[in-house]
Image 1 (cartoon, helix red, strand yellow):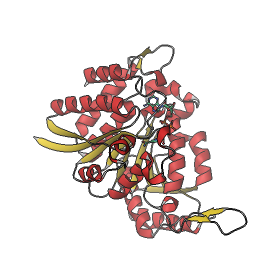
Image 2 (tube, protein in one colour):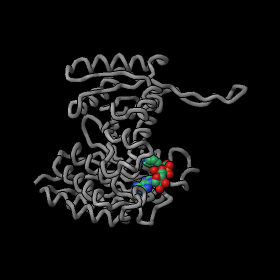
Image 3 (cartoon, helix red, strand yellow):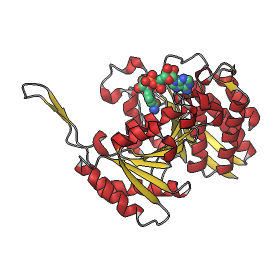
Image 4 (cartoon, protein in one colour):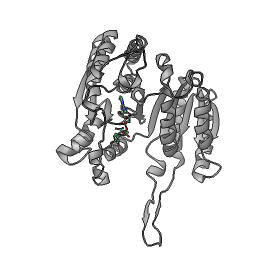
Length: 357
Ligand code: NAD
């Protein structure tokens, strides 16, 4: 029997509630699909700061490095916003990404048929949306040096540096090619090469690498046009490949095509070693502790973990089918409910999904 060791970071806010559902579901899937999954729980985020004075204790990071995959719920709370930047829960996330060298962030955006009406866009615009944003995660302007404040000027000044070398662009392009080859083989690379030198290098490198794979059809668009096209005709996209800053903005925009942040998973990967699988949403402090959060984004992240991280494709399919069945029967959490749905709590919808597995 295959054995996996995963680290579960429940984090803050609604994290423990949605993690409970994920734990139960993973255990059930392991029974049905004949694998053994050891779930090691570690403190991370605000809760780790409370106990250890740091959001990302070394012990947590070491355990993550030794695992087959990491499943993370969410971190953060307004009460930590006044802490020094390096002590805030969100800094823990950056440390984890760096420590595991997670250079590729993968965010699938698929509109589930039963939730077509949940989008703020017209049904006919979103019904064919099934795209993946591949975002470079540990380079570009968020990490570029020099950066800082200039204080000896008449008015305050601050600056950052957007920098990539071709090796960083090559490795994220290779990930996009791999993903595109499992789909419709279309990559749209997004940059701002009409203005930025770093984007010109991005465009040239992406062209160079993708031209080696004759199956791939590549298009390039500027980031401002990409934002417009994502709202005008999102169904045209298959794989969107882009840099850290542009990906941060576009992936949130794309995410909202589906209508609810409570439905969106993501994976952060490197070429070897464990990936981190986590919902797109934050810790939702406004609803924490009420058992009303939507656990599906975390369950879909667990599904990505099963598929990409553990190669348990059938278990992942089983989970996604179970989620679709529950939604098509009209069971919803409050965030995705419409007039005709039966509104369930976080744990209740988890139980319904368990029943379908
Ligand atoms: P948020 O995603 O936590 O919440 C935004 C809105 O969506 C809220 O109204 C919330 O109730 C709702 N929501 C989010 N997830 C939901 C779910 N699963 N089910 C139902 N409703 C859901 O974003 P925010 O309010 O801007 O941030 C709250 C905290 O989370 C902040 O401290 C922020 O820094 C942190 N954060 C963490 C992550 C992460 O852990 N990866 C990501 C984003 C924000």
